[in-house]
Image (tube, helix red, strand yellow):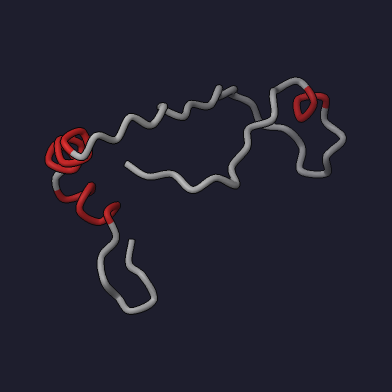
Length: 67
């Protein structure tokens, strides 16, 4: 929530006042698409051999997200 110089990032202000952060981003003309992920419940074995690992879709998580 803070950068390398300990200055707050937008996520910090989003935790303090989410409505204000959303309103501010809507005013700035941000039209970014909402990113969503499908969530499945389960407790697969951590050795990677459980079929549950292969039954859910892959979710890309290497993306920079902003509010």
